[in-house]
Length: 111
Length: 114
View 1 (cartoon, helix red, strand yellow):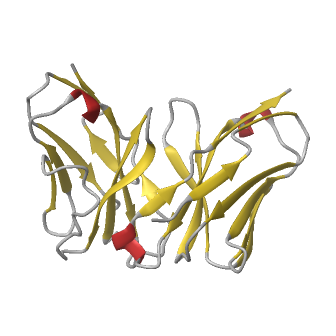
View 2: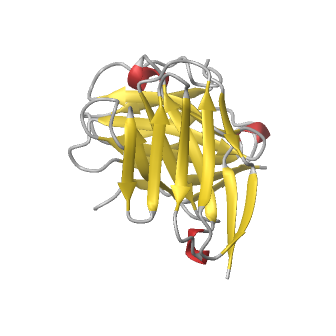
């Protein structure tokens, strides 16, 4: 079973700061997902990666398959970015493995 | 609808009762997943359907849990003889053909077992 570790668990920053959230996993994967969950809200998929780097607006996600590590970056952070960010990996067996989730990073951006 | 729809949004039941949770995936999505989010355990995978193929049930937490998917679309998760530890938010997600695709999550069903 894949072990997914996220750091930090909690992060408080000021508006405008550059944010980095890290994720590491223990076993080879088919893909890695970054998800966002607002308090009391649903889960939204931000990125799905199997290699390299993806960018969407102020969000950037990178993955290093050899090092079994991924990072999520937020540039010019804003209070509306406050949410729980969850890393999840899809095992080598694909859908039959389902996603294995990290415990999440609780991000608060203060104005 | 445009997104994944789950019903009911909230369910309160007594210990020992059976419950059924429903998921309507995005039209045309062949992959469907059930997950559970509980305070003590975080998010965990329950079961995956790809089209009409028989699912791998090994992720289900006990034999009280079962799931089916009719016509490759709507799915039902059934919990028999509910226990208090079954209290959680049950989430459904769907994706396009193939497991390696973006998953779109429903809002979940919050189950409370008294």
